[in-house]
Length: 129
Ligand code: 5GP
Image (cartoon, rainbow, N blue to C red; front, side, top):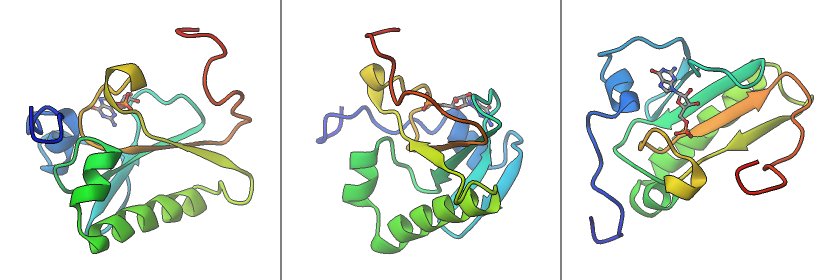
């Protein structure tokens, strides 16, 4: 565990490997500080993942440790993806999972951009439902 209580960043995680170009992705957009690509298992007609290029596990980790330029660059790309995918002004959802209870599968901070259909409830009505 690090000082923050998070496990150390795992350089073998799948998004780290995508960022290094070791495995392919369907790239949507890229900037100096972030990469956007299509989720391999889409949950909506539009399902794009936006990942910062730095080694961050969680939203708290990223926003506490990244530079202002990295944070701005990341969120700017999120907004650009939503626009470019035709989701604004129709509507869309941004989501980030963290840790075991948040259902995070890949321990590299990322935001999901969902859209292209009516998205329903924000979280299941019942735990595990
Ligand atoms: P999390 O649960 O960590 O928020 O979401 C991880 C997401 O990464 C999942 O939606 C999953 O489908 C996606 N994913 C896992 N492996 C790959 C991969 O190799 N390529 C792409 N494009 N997406 C992946």
